Amino acid sequence: MTALEPQLDTPAQVGVLFVCLGNICRSPLAEGIFLDAARKRQVAGRFRVDSCGLGAWHAGELPDERARLEASRHGLTLTHRARQVRAPHDFLEFRWILAMDRSNAARLTNLGAPASRLRLMRSFDPTLPVSERFDAEVPDPYTGGERDFQEVFGLLRSACEGLLDHLIRCPE
Image 1: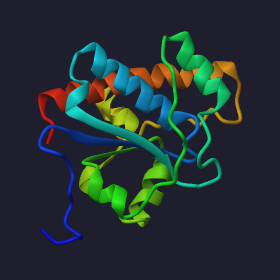
Image 2 (image 1 turned 60 degrees about the horizontal axis):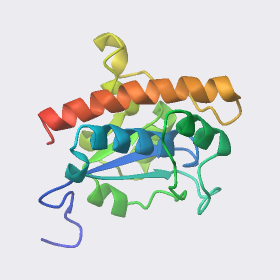
Image 3 (image 1 turned 90 degrees about the vertical axis):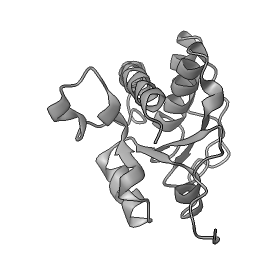
């Protein structure tokens, strides 16, 4: 194996990377929700999960206070520290790269993320009609209020459950 060949997973774990713009709202929420769902199903050890942002504005910071508050309402504690995507390293390390919106996906593609492993987060949302899944986005709640964070939490919970169902059925 050369240095540029993917080291996508360990034999026991599948890598899952959630990506948004600044890594303080949507992607850390998705990371926390996914990990919680995997723990509840007793499959957390099968996954290596992380999140990052396209920009470095918030690198090193905890998630937005409103995201942490919404997570705590659902019994989750978000402790992730924001980081910027590391291209191409992250694209070699994680099998699944989940973008929160089309703009994030386009920027990830421009950075070299393989199209075969890049998906929009809501493409796994089982509450959406199949015809809508591949264009549906998770809106950025950053400039919004409490209700926006509640909405995003609900969208992410549904999409994370669908993603987990998919990965349990067929991790490849």
